Amino acid sequence: MTRCSPASRHGCRLTTATALTLTFLTVTLPAGAIDYTWQTTLRTEWAGNIDTGRDQSLRLDLSPQLDLSLGDSVELTAIGHLRTEDNNTAGFDHLSLSAFDQITRPQIIGDSTAATLRELYIATEISGIHLTLGKQQVVWGEADGLKVLDIVNPQSFQYFILEEFEQSRIPTWMVNLETVVAGWDTQFLWIPDQTYHALPEDGSTWAFSSPQLVPSAAGLAPNTTVRMDKTDKPGKNIRDADTGLRLANNWRGWDFSLNYFYHYDDLPVLHRRATPGPSPGIVLTPKYHRTHTFGGTANNAFGDWVLRTEVGYSTDRYLLSNDVGNTDGITKGNEIAYVLGLDWSGLSNTLISAQLFQSHFSENNSVRDKKEANATLLAQRLFWNDTLTLEVIWLGSLNSGDGLLRPKISYEWQDDFKTWVGSDIFYGDKTGLFGQFHHNDQLSIGVEVDF
Image (cartoon, rainbow, N blue to C red; front, side, top):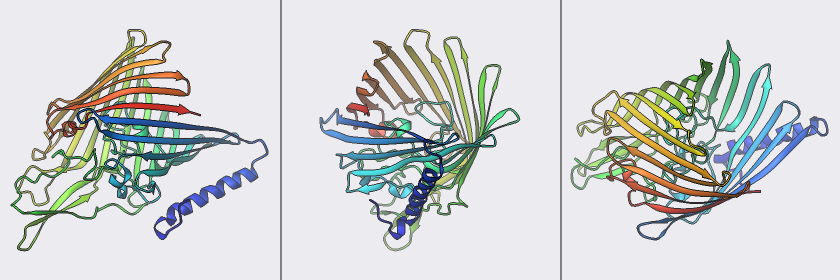
């Protein structure tokens, strides 16, 4: 049990309030009004480095879920998560827990185990408005594998992008209102939770090293010391809250949406400053910046084909600069990103899906290319009454030529018991987003059981 230390009293107050609410509902609702279901998922996965033959990770995840029906119109969902892992270079002691808001942060047990109240929300309907209140995930967008508009929840990069989004997204506390306005499905989000991307720290198996994300030492004077300063992080839950609006409709077979999100970019940018004195030095300060993201999605089916599109325009994007004379090492501009996806299911039990991602940054002096393009390809085939799945996923950069290949075989022995074998193969130059992990090729074996 976590003690209510001064630093964690906010979370303790929240837990106490939740318990009192459940007690009140239990006492006041008529007998028989409460109905519930309980399920626990146990998932374990081992991964070994293909090049060295050494264990790369061994983790066990336990996820209990409770669904309560409190009367005719109130439902409560609570999902816990306990992860323990035998990996000294990808454990929670190598993850930037400071990126979490105090009320969202995992409770660390030793060096290798973390307990999290992953989701806790109440869903009800009041006068035609569907209200979901609490810690939850909200998924925007149509893309798979890479993100354009799926930015409502931050992401854990503890294992880079190898975990499924359902697992790597970090649920946050929010108010989620959905209703119909003038024929449009309307969603409003208010998120006072200051939680951002959880990044691996130096020394981790999956720590970032690409110069697109980490400042290079090139151009610095010999014996220059580099020091990391405390993160400049928003800290006012009300003033710094994120807000979002999504409008969705259908027109002539097209499902489309219009999206707006006013938020802090979840990835901090490393500002630099020189320190005076006889010994040259550089101080790096991670900072989060506000941005407006406008966008939309559209998809339609044409026989065996499905066309998916998604676009997002973000203002005030801050990226690392390639100008050695730049004082703080940062360049500011605007970015437009989009994805075109095409899915084909013309062959029985088969899916072929291809996507093209492109991003255009308004300025020329950033470490990334002004125009960037990535592509993905998924080939999937089901056998034996959908119990055996063969698939291969490819993700690649069309600019730098690096990428990731992910073949996988999974078998569902029963509805509640599944096993799989897969591998993750990185290639390309170490300066690329994928190529930076070219030494982390791995073979993985996993088991998932529901009970």
